[in-house]
Amino acid sequence: MGKKSVAHLTSVHSRSDTRIFHKECRSLRSASFTVSLIVADGKGDQEDSGISIYDVGRPRNRFDRMLNTGNLILRKASNLDADIYHLHDPELIPIGLKLKKLGKKVIFDAHEDVPKQILSKPYLNPVVRKLISKAFEKYEAWACKKFDAIVAATPFIKNKFLLINEITIDVNNYPILGELKNVSHNSFINRRDVCYIGGLTTVRGIKELVLAIGAAKGNSRLKIAGTFSEKNLEVEIKRAAGWARVDVLGWLDREGVRTLLNSSLAGLVTLHPTPNYIDALPVKMFEYMSAGLPVIASNFPGWREIIEGNDCGICVDPLDPESIAAAIDTLTQDPLEAERMGSNGSSAVNLRYNWQIEKEKLLNLYSMLRE
Image 1 (cartoon, rainbow, N blue to C red):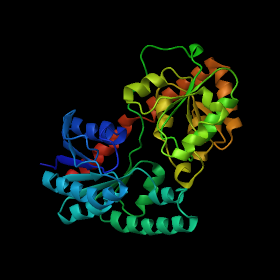
Image 2: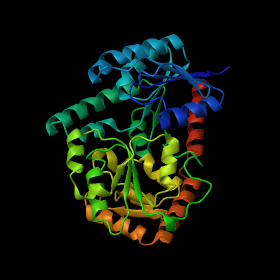
Image 3: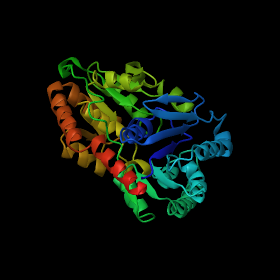
Protein backbone atom coordinates (compact mmCIF):
# COMPACT_ATOMS: atom_id res chain seq x y z
CA MET A 1 0.00 0.00 0.00
CA GLY A 2 1.27 3.52 -0.76
CA LYS A 3 2.28 6.06 1.82
CA LYS A 4 -0.75 7.73 3.39
CA SER A 5 0.34 9.93 6.31
CA VAL A 6 1.50 13.51 5.83
CA ALA A 7 2.59 16.28 8.17
CA HIS A 8 2.57 19.94 7.18
CA LEU A 9 5.06 22.12 9.07
CA THR A 10 5.06 25.88 9.65
CA SER A 11 6.81 28.09 12.18
CA VAL A 12 5.37 31.33 10.81
CA HIS A 13 1.87 30.86 9.42
CA SER A 14 -1.44 30.65 11.26
CA ARG A 15 -3.10 27.28 11.84
CA SER A 16 -6.02 28.64 9.81
CA ASP A 17 -3.82 29.81 6.92
CA THR A 18 -5.90 29.61 3.77
CA ARG A 19 -3.29 27.96 1.55
CA ILE A 20 -1.89 25.55 4.14
CA PHE A 21 -4.95 24.47 6.09
CA HIS A 22 -8.08 25.24 4.08
CA LYS A 23 -6.65 24.29 0.69
CA GLU A 24 -3.77 21.83 0.97
CA CYS A 25 -4.43 20.03 4.28
CA ARG A 26 -8.17 19.71 3.73
CA SER A 27 -7.69 18.56 0.14
CA LEU A 28 -5.31 15.81 1.28
CA ARG A 29 -7.70 14.81 4.06
CA SER A 30 -10.56 14.54 1.55
CA ALA A 31 -8.31 12.21 -0.48
CA SER A 32 -8.04 9.86 2.54
CA PHE A 33 -4.60 10.90 3.76
CA THR A 34 -3.97 11.04 7.50
CA VAL A 35 -3.04 14.70 7.88
CA SER A 36 -1.23 16.53 10.68
CA LEU A 37 -0.29 20.19 10.91
CA ILE A 38 2.50 21.40 13.20
CA VAL A 39 2.34 25.10 14.11
CA ALA A 40 3.95 27.52 16.58
CA ASP A 41 1.19 29.86 17.70
CA GLY A 42 0.62 29.06 21.41
CA LYS A 43 -3.03 28.14 20.93
CA GLY A 44 -2.65 24.47 21.90
CA ASP A 45 -3.39 21.19 20.15
CA GLN A 46 -6.74 20.57 18.47
CA GLU A 47 -8.62 18.52 15.88
CA ASP A 48 -10.26 20.40 13.02
CA SER A 49 -11.95 18.88 9.97
CA GLY A 50 -10.27 15.54 10.66
CA ILE A 51 -6.82 17.15 10.77
CA SER A 52 -4.63 16.90 13.90
CA ILE A 53 -3.06 20.25 14.77
CA TYR A 54 -0.02 20.20 17.06
CA ASP A 55 1.29 23.39 18.66
CA VAL A 56 4.95 23.62 19.78
CA GLY A 57 4.34 26.97 21.48
CA ARG A 58 4.58 30.59 20.42
CA PRO A 59 8.16 31.92 20.35
CA ARG A 60 8.92 34.94 22.56
CA ASN A 61 10.47 36.86 19.67
CA ARG A 62 12.06 36.37 16.25
CA PHE A 63 15.39 35.34 17.79
CA ASP A 64 13.68 32.68 19.91
CA ARG A 65 11.86 31.44 16.81
CA MET A 66 15.04 31.11 14.81
CA LEU A 67 16.98 29.52 17.68
CA ASN A 68 14.47 27.15 19.28
CA THR A 69 11.21 26.76 17.35
CA GLY A 70 12.76 24.73 14.53
CA ASN A 71 14.10 22.15 16.98
CA LEU A 72 10.70 21.85 18.67
CA ILE A 73 9.05 21.35 15.28
CA LEU A 74 11.65 18.72 14.32
CA ARG A 75 11.06 16.83 17.57
CA LYS A 76 7.28 16.78 17.08
CA ALA A 77 7.66 15.90 13.37
CA SER A 78 9.97 12.98 14.18
CA ASN A 79 7.56 11.68 16.84
CA LEU A 80 4.69 11.71 14.35
CA ASP A 81 6.69 9.42 12.03
CA ALA A 82 4.73 10.56 8.96
CA ASP A 83 5.51 9.26 5.49
CA ILE A 84 5.65 12.66 3.80
CA TYR A 85 6.61 16.02 5.31
CA HIS A 86 5.51 19.26 3.65
CA LEU A 87 7.45 22.41 4.69
CA HIS A 88 6.01 25.91 4.33
CA ASP A 89 8.79 28.24 5.53
CA PRO A 90 12.34 28.83 4.28
CA GLU A 91 13.63 28.73 7.86
CA LEU A 92 12.47 25.10 8.05
CA ILE A 93 14.73 23.99 5.20
CA PRO A 94 17.36 22.69 7.71
CA ILE A 95 14.58 20.66 9.37
CA GLY A 96 13.71 19.18 5.99
CA LEU A 97 17.32 18.13 5.45
CA LYS A 98 17.35 16.37 8.84
CA LEU A 99 14.09 14.59 8.00
CA LYS A 100 15.65 13.44 4.73
CA LYS A 101 18.50 11.89 6.72
CA LEU A 102 15.84 9.95 8.65
CA GLY A 103 14.68 8.47 5.33
CA LYS A 104 11.55 10.60 4.99
CA LYS A 105 10.05 12.11 1.87
CA VAL A 106 10.10 15.89 2.02
CA ILE A 107 8.28 18.56 -0.03
CA PHE A 108 9.22 22.23 0.14
CA ASP A 109 6.37 24.65 -0.57
CA ALA A 110 7.85 27.87 -2.00
CA HIS A 111 5.24 30.53 -1.22
CA GLU A 112 7.60 33.33 -2.24
CA ASP A 113 10.76 33.92 -4.23
CA VAL A 114 12.82 34.54 -1.08
CA PRO A 115 15.99 35.94 -2.71
CA LYS A 116 13.83 38.55 -4.48
CA GLN A 117 11.90 39.16 -1.26
CA ILE A 118 15.17 39.94 0.54
CA LEU A 119 16.01 42.49 -2.15
CA SER A 120 12.77 44.31 -1.27
CA LYS A 121 13.52 44.70 2.48
CA PRO A 122 13.63 48.51 3.07
CA TYR A 123 15.33 48.22 6.47
CA LEU A 124 18.44 46.52 5.03
CA ASN A 125 21.37 48.37 3.51
CA PRO A 126 21.27 47.88 -0.31
CA VAL A 127 24.72 46.22 -0.36
CA VAL A 128 23.79 43.96 2.56
CA ARG A 129 20.51 43.07 0.83
CA LYS A 130 22.35 41.88 -2.26
CA LEU A 131 24.85 39.83 -0.26
CA ILE A 132 22.17 38.12 1.85
CA SER A 133 20.00 37.50 -1.21
CA LYS A 134 22.82 35.89 -3.15
CA ALA A 135 23.93 33.78 -0.17
CA PHE A 136 20.40 32.49 0.44
CA GLU A 137 19.91 31.79 -3.27
CA LYS A 138 22.95 29.48 -3.23
CA TYR A 139 21.88 27.75 -0.02
CA GLU A 140 18.31 27.31 -1.28
CA ALA A 141 19.53 25.72 -4.52
CA TRP A 142 21.90 23.36 -2.69
CA ALA A 143 19.26 22.26 -0.16
CA CYS A 144 16.19 22.02 -2.39
CA LYS A 145 18.05 19.73 -4.78
CA LYS A 146 17.90 17.13 -2.01
CA PHE A 147 14.13 17.29 -1.46
CA ASP A 148 11.68 14.90 -3.12
CA ALA A 149 9.60 17.67 -4.66
CA ILE A 150 9.06 21.41 -4.76
CA VAL A 151 5.59 22.97 -4.77
CA ALA A 152 5.69 26.54 -6.10
CA ALA A 153 2.96 29.12 -5.52
CA THR A 154 3.33 30.67 -9.00
CA PRO A 155 4.52 29.60 -12.45
CA PHE A 156 7.42 32.08 -12.17
CA ILE A 157 8.67 30.45 -8.95
CA LYS A 158 8.15 27.02 -10.53
CA ASN A 159 10.38 27.91 -13.48
CA LYS A 160 13.13 28.99 -11.09
CA PHE A 161 12.98 25.75 -9.09
CA LEU A 162 12.82 23.52 -12.17
CA LEU A 163 16.48 24.44 -12.69
CA ILE A 164 17.17 23.10 -9.19
CA ASN A 165 14.82 20.13 -8.81
CA GLU A 166 13.11 18.45 -11.78
CA ILE A 167 10.16 17.38 -9.62
CA THR A 168 8.68 20.86 -9.29
CA ILE A 169 5.07 21.84 -9.88
CA ASP A 170 3.11 25.04 -9.48
CA VAL A 171 0.09 24.89 -7.20
CA ASN A 172 -1.35 28.36 -7.51
CA ASN A 173 -3.13 29.95 -4.58
CA TYR A 174 -6.42 30.33 -6.43
CA PRO A 175 -9.78 30.62 -4.64
CA ILE A 176 -12.03 27.79 -3.56
CA LEU A 177 -15.09 27.96 -5.81
CA GLY A 178 -18.16 29.39 -4.11
CA GLU A 179 -16.36 30.32 -0.89
CA LEU A 180 -16.54 34.10 -1.19
CA LYS A 181 -19.64 34.90 -3.22
CA ASN A 182 -23.06 35.20 -1.64
CA VAL A 183 -25.94 33.45 -3.35
CA SER A 184 -28.23 36.40 -2.67
CA HIS A 185 -27.07 39.20 -4.96
CA ASN A 186 -26.52 42.69 -3.60
CA SER A 187 -26.93 45.08 -6.54
CA PHE A 188 -23.88 47.12 -7.47
CA ILE A 189 -26.12 50.19 -7.77
CA ASN A 190 -26.32 50.19 -3.96
CA ARG A 191 -22.54 49.85 -3.49
CA ARG A 192 -20.07 52.73 -3.28
CA ASP A 193 -17.13 51.55 -1.12
CA VAL A 194 -13.89 49.93 -2.25
CA CYS A 195 -11.87 47.46 -0.20
CA TYR A 196 -8.34 46.22 0.41
CA ILE A 197 -7.49 42.93 2.15
CA GLY A 198 -3.96 42.24 3.35
CA GLY A 199 -1.00 43.54 5.33
CA LEU A 200 -0.66 47.31 5.71
CA THR A 201 2.91 48.11 4.67
CA THR A 202 4.69 50.65 2.51
CA VAL A 203 5.48 48.26 -0.34
CA ARG A 204 1.90 46.99 -0.41
CA GLY A 205 0.81 50.49 -1.33
CA ILE A 206 -1.33 51.45 1.65
CA LYS A 207 -0.13 55.07 1.64
CA GLU A 208 -1.14 55.55 -2.01
CA LEU A 209 -4.53 53.95 -1.34
CA VAL A 210 -5.32 56.39 1.47
CA LEU A 211 -4.23 59.36 -0.67
CA ALA A 212 -6.30 57.98 -3.56
CA ILE A 213 -9.53 57.67 -1.57
CA GLY A 214 -8.97 61.24 -0.38
CA ALA A 215 -8.69 62.39 -3.99
CA ALA A 216 -11.61 60.31 -5.30
CA LYS A 217 -14.86 62.07 -6.17
CA GLY A 218 -18.16 61.28 -4.50
CA ASN A 219 -18.59 59.80 -1.04
CA SER A 220 -17.01 56.38 -1.44
CA ARG A 221 -14.96 54.99 1.44
CA LEU A 222 -11.95 52.67 1.62
CA LYS A 223 -12.51 49.64 3.84
CA ILE A 224 -9.30 47.92 4.94
CA ALA A 225 -9.10 44.40 6.34
CA GLY A 226 -5.61 44.11 7.78
CA THR A 227 -3.22 45.44 10.41
CA PHE A 228 -0.23 47.77 10.33
CA SER A 229 3.19 46.20 10.79
CA GLU A 230 5.15 49.47 10.54
CA LYS A 231 4.35 51.82 13.45
CA ASN A 232 5.87 54.92 11.87
CA LEU A 233 3.88 54.28 8.71
CA GLU A 234 0.65 54.02 10.68
CA VAL A 235 1.31 57.36 12.39
CA GLU A 236 2.13 59.02 9.06
CA ILE A 237 -0.90 57.66 7.22
CA LYS A 238 -3.35 58.63 9.94
CA ARG A 239 -2.33 62.23 9.33
CA ALA A 240 -3.13 62.04 5.61
CA ALA A 241 -6.17 63.92 4.29
CA GLY A 242 -7.79 60.75 2.98
CA TRP A 243 -7.78 59.04 6.38
CA ALA A 244 -11.20 60.52 7.21
CA ARG A 245 -12.64 58.26 4.48
CA VAL A 246 -10.95 55.06 5.68
CA ASP A 247 -12.46 52.31 7.84
CA VAL A 248 -9.90 49.91 9.34
CA LEU A 249 -11.64 46.61 10.11
CA GLY A 250 -8.59 44.73 11.42
CA TRP A 251 -8.03 41.04 10.73
CA LEU A 252 -11.15 39.28 9.40
CA ASP A 253 -11.94 35.56 9.31
CA ARG A 254 -13.14 34.00 6.06
CA GLU A 255 -16.79 34.81 6.76
CA GLY A 256 -15.84 38.40 7.54
CA VAL A 257 -13.90 38.62 4.27
CA ARG A 258 -16.87 37.27 2.36
CA THR A 259 -19.21 39.82 3.94
CA LEU A 260 -16.84 42.66 3.10
CA LEU A 261 -16.38 41.57 -0.52
CA ASN A 262 -20.10 41.18 -1.09
CA SER A 263 -20.78 44.74 0.03
CA SER A 264 -17.91 46.41 -1.88
CA LEU A 265 -17.86 47.96 -5.34
CA ALA A 266 -14.25 46.99 -6.17
CA GLY A 267 -11.16 45.34 -4.73
CA LEU A 268 -7.74 47.01 -4.65
CA VAL A 269 -4.36 45.31 -5.07
CA THR A 270 -1.84 48.04 -5.89
CA LEU A 271 1.44 46.55 -4.67
CA HIS A 272 4.63 48.45 -5.42
CA PRO A 273 6.85 47.32 -8.34
CA THR A 274 9.42 45.52 -6.15
CA PRO A 275 11.32 42.47 -7.50
CA ASN A 276 9.22 40.16 -5.34
CA TYR A 277 5.83 41.51 -6.41
CA ILE A 278 6.18 42.06 -10.16
CA ASP A 279 6.06 38.31 -10.90
CA ALA A 280 3.74 37.40 -8.00
CA LEU A 281 0.13 36.23 -8.26
CA PRO A 282 -1.51 37.76 -5.17
CA VAL A 283 -4.35 35.63 -3.88
CA LYS A 284 -6.41 38.72 -3.04
CA MET A 285 -6.65 39.59 -6.75
CA PHE A 286 -8.30 36.25 -7.51
CA GLU A 287 -10.46 36.40 -4.41
CA TYR A 288 -11.86 39.74 -5.55
CA MET A 289 -12.58 38.17 -8.94
CA SER A 290 -14.13 35.10 -7.32
CA ALA A 291 -16.52 37.32 -5.36
CA GLY A 292 -17.55 39.09 -8.56
CA LEU A 293 -15.71 42.35 -7.89
CA PRO A 294 -13.82 44.35 -10.51
CA VAL A 295 -10.14 44.67 -9.60
CA ILE A 296 -8.04 47.82 -9.47
CA ALA A 297 -4.51 46.42 -9.80
CA SER A 298 -0.89 47.43 -10.38
CA ASN A 299 -0.03 47.68 -14.06
CA PHE A 300 2.61 44.91 -14.04
CA PRO A 301 2.74 43.00 -17.36
CA GLY A 302 1.56 39.66 -15.92
CA TRP A 303 -1.24 41.28 -13.94
CA ARG A 304 -2.33 43.36 -16.93
CA GLU A 305 -2.56 40.17 -18.98
CA ILE A 306 -4.99 38.70 -16.43
CA ILE A 307 -7.04 41.83 -15.66
CA GLU A 308 -7.30 43.34 -19.11
CA GLY A 309 -7.26 39.95 -20.85
CA ASN A 310 -10.40 38.97 -18.94
CA ASP A 311 -11.85 42.52 -18.96
CA CYS A 312 -12.38 42.31 -15.22
CA GLY A 313 -10.88 45.53 -13.88
CA ILE A 314 -8.53 48.47 -14.35
CA CYS A 315 -4.72 48.52 -14.17
CA VAL A 316 -3.08 51.62 -12.66
CA ASP A 317 0.29 53.02 -11.72
CA PRO A 318 0.54 51.85 -8.07
CA LEU A 319 2.84 54.74 -7.16
CA ASP A 320 0.38 57.39 -8.42
CA PRO A 321 -2.61 58.08 -6.10
CA GLU A 322 -4.29 60.14 -8.83
CA SER A 323 -4.24 57.12 -11.18
CA ILE A 324 -5.82 54.95 -8.47
CA ALA A 325 -8.39 57.66 -7.67
CA ALA A 326 -9.36 57.91 -11.35
CA ALA A 327 -10.00 54.15 -11.48
CA ILE A 328 -12.15 54.36 -8.34
CA ASP A 329 -14.11 57.23 -9.92
CA THR A 330 -14.63 55.28 -13.16
CA LEU A 331 -16.27 52.43 -11.26
CA THR A 332 -18.27 54.46 -8.74
CA GLN A 333 -19.71 56.60 -11.52
CA ASP A 334 -20.78 53.55 -13.54
CA PRO A 335 -21.80 50.73 -11.16
CA LEU A 336 -23.29 48.69 -14.01
CA GLU A 337 -19.89 48.67 -15.74
CA ALA A 338 -18.32 47.66 -12.43
CA GLU A 339 -20.81 44.81 -12.18
CA ARG A 340 -20.08 43.68 -15.74
CA MET A 341 -16.34 43.59 -15.07
CA GLY A 342 -16.95 41.76 -11.80
CA SER A 343 -19.03 39.15 -13.60
CA ASN A 344 -16.23 38.65 -16.12
CA GLY A 345 -13.76 38.08 -13.32
CA SER A 346 -16.04 35.57 -11.63
CA SER A 347 -16.39 33.65 -14.90
CA ALA A 348 -12.61 33.60 -15.37
CA VAL A 349 -12.16 32.11 -11.88
CA ASN A 350 -14.80 29.48 -12.58
CA LEU A 351 -13.01 28.49 -15.79
CA ARG A 352 -9.29 28.84 -14.99
CA TYR A 353 -8.25 30.37 -11.71
CA ASN A 354 -9.74 28.07 -9.07
CA TRP A 355 -8.51 25.67 -6.39
CA GLN A 356 -10.25 22.62 -7.85
CA ILE A 357 -7.76 22.65 -10.75
CA GLU A 358 -4.78 23.26 -8.44
CA LYS A 359 -5.95 20.58 -6.01
CA GLU A 360 -5.63 17.94 -8.70
CA LYS A 361 -2.00 18.93 -9.31
CA LEU A 362 -1.26 18.56 -5.59
CA LEU A 363 -2.97 15.17 -5.32
CA ASN A 364 -1.20 13.89 -8.43
CA LEU A 365 2.15 14.84 -6.90
CA TYR A 366 1.31 13.03 -3.67
CA SER A 367 0.16 9.96 -5.59
CA MET A 368 3.52 9.89 -7.35
CA LEU A 369 5.42 10.19 -4.06
CA ARG A 370 3.36 7.36 -2.53
CA GLU A 371 4.51 4.91 -5.20
